[in-house]
Length: 303
Image 1 (tube, rainbow, N blue to C red):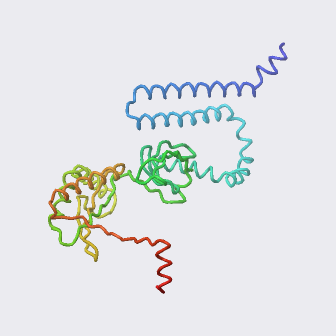
Image 2 (image 1 turned 120 degrees about the vertical axis):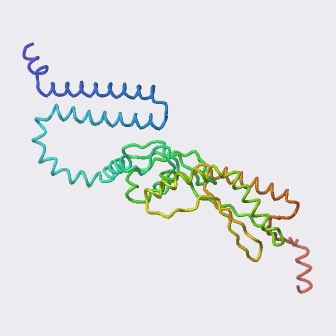
Image 3 (image 1 turned 90 degrees about the vertical axis):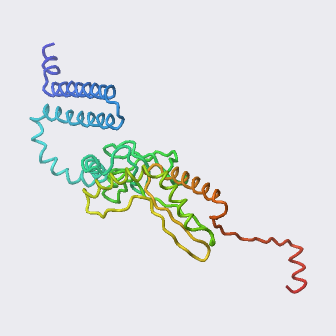
């Protein structure tokens, strides 16, 4: 019995394993308690998500610290072996290492955060999760027209931030410029058409313009860029078919399609109420169908 105790219960290796297991269990319990407290007391979803992620990352660090402390006396002998194997491991796992490095860059350089709308690795979507290896996006577009969800959840390796540009639709300036074009017939009251479009823009876009001005002023303080116009702007272009009036405006990045629908509905309604003073232009094409008997008669007549 004494030999058994000396061989197993008092063996240094067994003791280190038990100490490591107990330490890791304690870390897991602490992390779980922290996450539950965050979920209970933090109401804002974005802050709650970041707090839970931070607790998980802290748990990883504590687990590594526990294991390093327990095996600190034996780690010195592996230094040379780890140095030799390091180059081979780095080459074999270069994509994995690049993804982890990408996670650090996203976390500390703030390329994007959860809730942002981005284009990453050729995929457009809203960021729903940022892991150590992959970023999860709820995809928009593709076969769905407009900036609408198509239902696919896409996981993109974090290493892509070092390989391709990262487009953030909602970073420092959460607005986008958009345009609508209203074609007007020649002979229409162009001045009245301008007034109708301008009135619709002022009524429907004034809140966006005011918020965009505040955000743009902050952006100018941060980056050396010019002071752009965020108020609605109407420009005119005349060609051989009609007069095109283009309305350029800023809109919240998630409301491009709905805002365009509201603008067109208002403008077309005002044009219809102008009693013919303004008419929307359109192109038409006549298509004539010829049946087989007509073709035979034309052939017989030498046509």
